[in-house]
Image 1 (cartoon, rainbow, N blue to C red):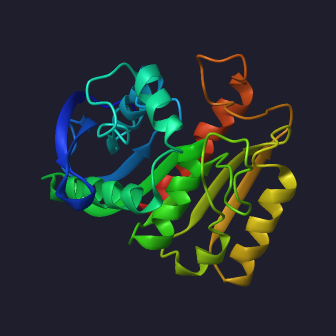
Image 2 (cartoon, rainbow, N blue to C red):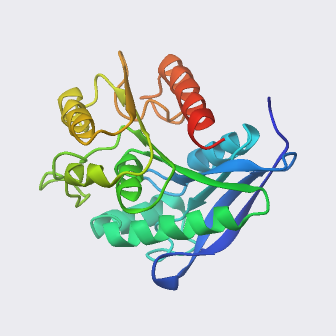
Length: 246
């Protein structure tokens, strides 16, 4: 079912009480619904990720994407803001968690909220989605090819990130992981380390790895886009949300 929706740019209270820009998508023909925080990829708060926010709203979920680069480059074009953030090593983990907490609070304050909130992230956002799930009371977590969950970022990477696998015991909700078999960050071997840690911690999780897909296979604006993997990935996402937050 495709829902009527409204999408708009708003301001929310993020980490430390900072006022930051965010993009909100709401189904307008529901009495109550689950919610999801959308964490953008390292290229930033862009049109492709705003389209994902609208896709969730069209499928009956309130979705909110905080602009993680708002402080570095308020009002800047996505590429320029991403370059500024990349030059400083990316978003600090503590600040990311605070911004996601602010997004969760906003979603739960909506009149249509059923109080359940998931997170989803892509690329660097996949790691950040898992990180948020380890440190916040999220009802469900989706990690789309998040790099550096089990290894630190290499010295040559513009992203300064440390492994978070040791924190998975703190997860409150189930985890869905969607990966490409041809990806290197994260590689299938790295994903297995994460799966083993989740199993050891007794966590509910489901990982799906797509043959013939590498990094960013969901991204329709890139040569890495793989329609079959993306279509099946979306089926996994909405099945998971139906089970966890609907």
